Length: 118
Length: 118
DNA sequence: TTTCAATACCTTGAACCGCGATGTATCATC
DNA sequence: GATGATACATCGCGGTTCAAGGTATTGAAA
Image (tube, rainbow over all chains, first blue to last red; front, side, top):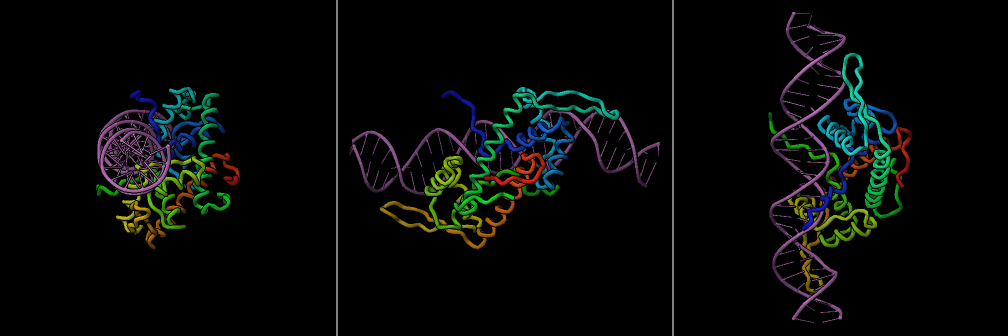
């Protein structure tokens, strides 16, 4: 009864988190984001365009991003910027992620005192 | 061509990682693992039995665990132990996870020097 | 000059994982 | 003798992610 908002897996939403974080630092376009994630993580994380573009569309639909089309070098780019709502969303996801990673790290270190991740 | 084994999402397999880690410390049975994860993470992570039992079955099938049935207080428990293969698997997953979490943390901290997670 | 690689956008089908629900059975408690 | 905790198990749903494909422009190579 009452379908309710379905429960996403507790580990999902990382691409969204990364994208929001990147856009908080500077406005970017989709293709740029794909490469930024690849390069800044030393290719440890590589999300494809098939992941990034849908996320961007959803975030824009939800009012977390604004899009602005700009022709550059004869190529059409769509630059995305964080809205205040997007910043809030980033803040929430970031907190959730840190709690999660800390909890996992806690188990991995054998329940001892948490070790720094790096 | 050549169908290949499909690529799991880069964020999956965390329950498996946690279970392997717990079993490395001591042998445990399914129901116990469910609660151990809940309590040791302060309820930040709560995987249900619908997650744990299938993972245990798969790990046993893959030779990463051995199962041993023990009646305790008239209740039948199935205790699982890590095999050497399981220990290797844990080591691999653990490394992968740490790399991943470090990479994400690196982006979250704005590409500066990584901050300790806890 | 045509062909290839890179840029830049996009969608779609399938896979997989995790989730809640559900089911069985035993034990202790009330 | 009903309820709740223990302990096992499975199943279908749904969401995320993935690879693959598609369009179009630019610039370099062949």
